[in-house]
Length: 105
Image 1: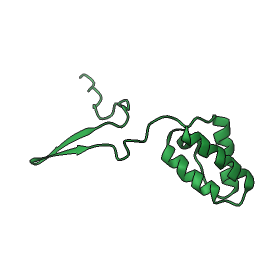
Image 2: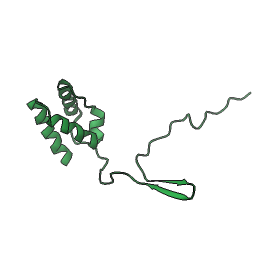
Image 3: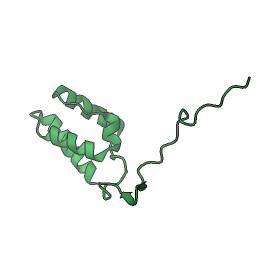
């Protein structure tokens, strides 16, 4: 008796990132495009130690900031920026100003 090959669903597939999709439903053709085409997929130009320090400062202020998400998700980084600017901690507001400059690059 031979062993069955693994199901194609059990094999991980590589991510190809966001891309345009065509979906056919009944007689209609739906074109799914990115919601924010002007947002580019480039990382935030700040070092990991800086992002870790920002995350620690946010935690001290009672807010969370995920380092890996801050590095590659500019929308999330802007959300954290707004939270940091609203905090009372002047050091955190200074870091937020630096983050604002990095997001403009």
